[in-house]
Amino acid sequence: MLLIWELTARYSGWSPHVFPSPSKVVYSMGELIANGALLRHSIASLFRVTVGFYLAVIFAIPLGIFLGRMEIFNLMLNPLIQFLRPISPLAWIPLAVLWFGIGDKPAVFLIFLSCFFPSCGGHGDSGSCHLIRFFFQVAANFKFNHWETITKIILPAIMPNVLTALRLTMGIGWLVVVAAEMLAVRSGLGYLILDSRNALRMDYVMVGMMMIGLLGIVLDELMRRLVHLHPSLQRPY
Image 1 (cartoon, rainbow, N blue to C red):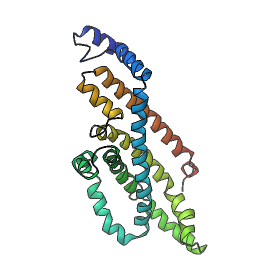
Image 2 (image 1 turned 135 degrees about the vertical axis):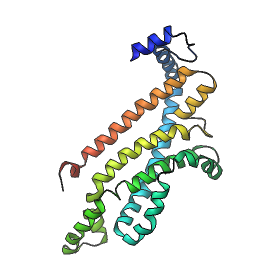
Image 3 (image 1 turned 90 degrees about the vertical axis):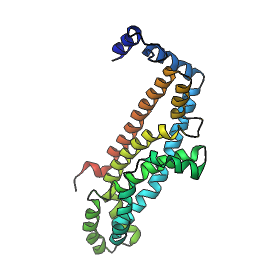
Image 4 (image 1 turned 180 degrees about the horizontal axis):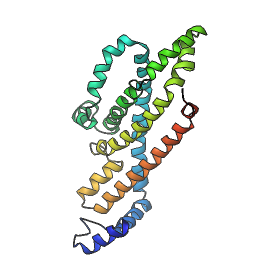
């Protein structure tokens, strides 16, 4: 693929400003690494994704457990969740800017939205709630209190589905960060791509794209290892 890319860039007749060769992109990546810009933008993107992801986890998983325990509230709130979940986080951009102004807040809010609904519904509709209800009889026999029921029954039962949902959620959040950083921020890989496009530096644009892909692979591998570390994934129920 790199050879085809290099030959196309050299002999297609396209300007390097339109279609830079891989050697040019690698050279430009060296420039951005040398001046510290690539590291700075990568850290900014990782920071926003991390904050938005953890905020979504903090709110979504307890809500998912609550809805799994309280059927009446599940009947009330689940239609709202299912209504909001298909709405693209990018559709919230005008409201995010209006509500939070400029800076990190609207970007974090968009990433939070992209991660919240998959985390909340990722295990609620997967059959784990039925599994939890089945184990409630065991909890009653052992006279577990509310805290013991959560820690010894609910969390171990839903953890495989939760971890799998979180792996998918992290990927979604990393996708959204590029679009989120194209509004009202001056750092991040999304901003690097937008600013480079405005300056007609397509080599820098491709560097930003390559970093997004490389960091995406790293994040997915970390989440994959986290999923397989959980012992409940190694045995069937």
